[in-house]
Image 1 (cartoon, rainbow, N blue to C red):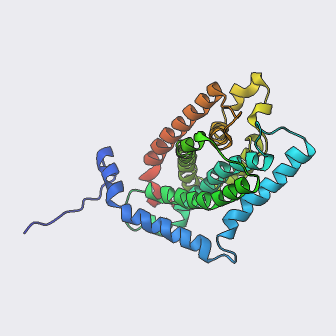
Image 2 (image 1 turned 90 degrees about the vertical axis):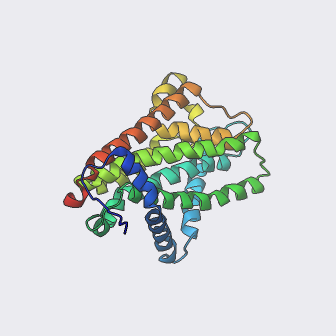
Length: 275
């Protein structure tokens, strides 16, 4: 009689590890679905939280940057749509960082008892933020209908920029998840990073207001390229991408994703002992 043998060892080969990710896909579905249910079932107004947060932030930013500061929009796009086109990827990114950074700590009992590729845990946390992103997209459709704003053919490229936003979220999220296991002080650092990042990213204003000589340096913030890409796809018309800065931002996203996976895999074998 043929029997199957499961070997658990500290140093599994890279090829075997990626095969295990597929083998344990049902655990990935379970963790993501569990977190989605917990997020929406244990709140008073459920999914409305995913709509209220970006909507209220958009209202405040529109009042401050358009009403008080009199900053211009891009082309003929209404200012609320300009802001909300940036709020979507930013909320996805900031939510993913918050979820990823605590994902391993929140699943510490699971990590210390059974073997599975630990990469599944922070990835499922990003999926929860992506569900928020999809729900919040309904407000963008409502704004377009309210202002009779019709996007052009560029909207078809939006999935590409969503993929870049996903890569940025995963890259930084993996770093924070691994660091939070080793250094618990990072649970206090993440909210500061999210708040600080909101102010230095072009969420409430167009990146075109940044002086030309500083735009390349400004693009060292990887979310600048992501946000500019979203606006280019959604606003269409006169909206333009600063290509050198976009190339810098996307390159940094690739570096963050690669280095995040590398560092996470390097620290993964110690998670069960440290956590």
